Amino acid sequence: SVALGNVAVVAGLFCWGFGLLSFALFYWGFAAKIVADTLLMVLAGRYLKPSKIKYYLASLALYPFYFMMIGIFSLLRKYEWKGRVFKQ
Image (cartoon, rainbow, N blue to C red; front, side, top):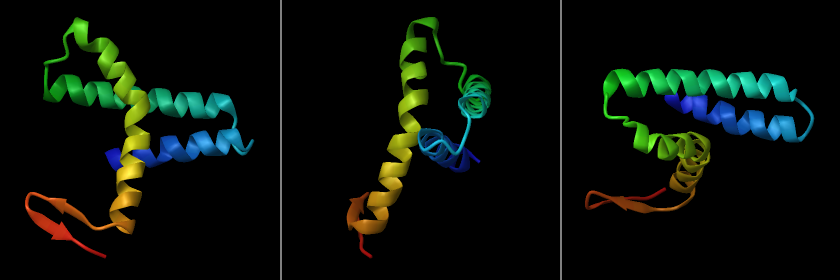
């Protein structure tokens, strides 16, 4: 799933930073996620124009951290979405 891939990227980066994972393994895992995400985007949307490729590549690097941050914040704080308030 997409969520598991995002968590794996963040966890892999931390494990590599602490010496628990080789850079090559992290690199190939991240490359596999990029290939899978790209195939999904191309097959689902067909909107990725060559001029927007730089934004897509930047989002591949930033989205896993954004995903984790939103997930953690949603567990710790109340939030409002579409007029509904969600509390813990």
